[in-house]
Image (cartoon, rainbow, N blue to C red):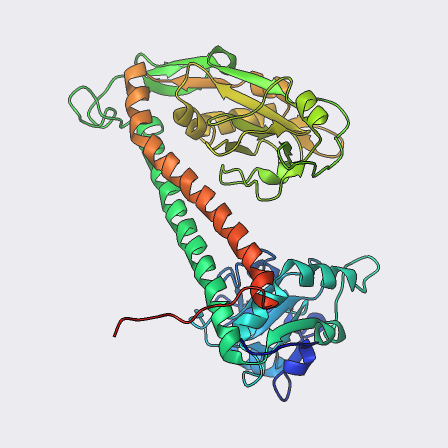
Length: 438
């Protein structure tokens, strides 16, 4: 492996206007935004979790306006958030949707001298936890977090002197991220499949009838339901959630102290519950064993349990995968399906009937809305004939389990990347050249 050198980021900047700020003031204001043209990179296009660049969700400027601003970003350029959510960073990919972008007034752009450094290597270094913390520590804002061009140029970077070595390292890390991205795309399709099946069976009521034909479309009998204020198939019913599920509140006590201890005991926090119905436990809130025993005295959540937020992100919910067993923290309620199929129940929570009841039963406080245990216990579920529910469960369970396995795989890949990142960059681990058969 080539020599490792420690320099500042400014030492590998390309000649000319390589480090620039976004245009100031109203020169890039909303009145200039168009539906097409040159895309404007904003905060929603950058992240702090190795997604590199979110190549969608743009507003646009005319070519004339973009030319006037002189704030372009092109393939290989690295873009930082300069105000607000500092620490966000992205790189314009090789196969970007557009040949040219414009950075917003809250961003900085850095262009790498490719004779000195490989841009993707530089990106991974700048997206690392230690550089994120360096940027946070160098914040110059008193009310709004800020960084400037001087801070960017002075960021430390360690890299092999040979750009070929840099590329090898970046390619290994990119391969992991590409697999994570592929899994995420598959999961999006799996989630869409499960939702489409649920809607077809339990919103449109075109589940297979006794003859295998779509029930409602084939003239299946519908009856008016007073609770739901709409028609449902004959023989179906509504029941309180407590008739088929246990609803268990969190411990209403002071939040325990974070303690690594032996890394066995942790509590779910609101940020672990994602909007897509998944649980993300890459960042665990570890507690001591006595605190864990106290906070799990009511319930230790396990596979197929549902966790629902009570405040903050109100009524967000997620299903516990097979790989997770833990306690629940403050402002979270656990729901355990007992005499109802777990995946049918999970998908029904995002259905129109439950969502309408949640909106109706929200508590409107002085400062924020909440959905507490009392509101959850008042929910009424729609129950089809048991043979229909069982058939649906058998159909949808493999889809949900496949999604959960890919989520687990992504968590493991993320941990591998995070472990490899410093080891590769400080020379503790090297990338061996590939050996091909002649």
